[in-house]
Length: 155
Image 1: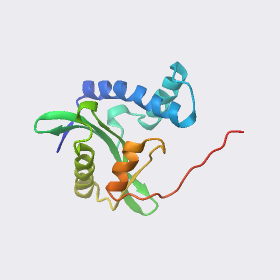
Image 2 (image 1 turned 90 degrees about the vertical axis):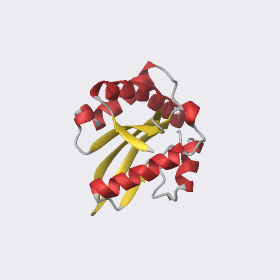
Image 3 (image 1 turned 30 degrees about the vertical axis):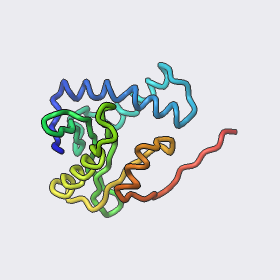
């Protein structure tokens, strides 16, 4: 698995690709309709995090490449969590035709190696929606454990 840095145009295309995926996850997780409002929420959240777009400090965007073929994307950042340096996985996206082939595991392993080498990170952190069974399975398989649980109830 290789990480290929995105060009500015590829980054724009990636964010355009990511917004509807993120909007669907928000809608599913919060029981919202999948509409323009949900797309707007996803756009606003991404713009808030990426204030400087691709040039936001300590944020990294890569294509995932296996045998010279693009199989997905990964977005992570180096951050401080209390007194530790962590790599925070924001998004991993394996293209549909490449899912179930172990590329998610390879990408996470490569991200961890990259983080150790470039960010002196001691931990990996991420958020995952509880309805994302594929991601939950991958993370559990890779040894991740829950740090906290956010619960909600409609009233």
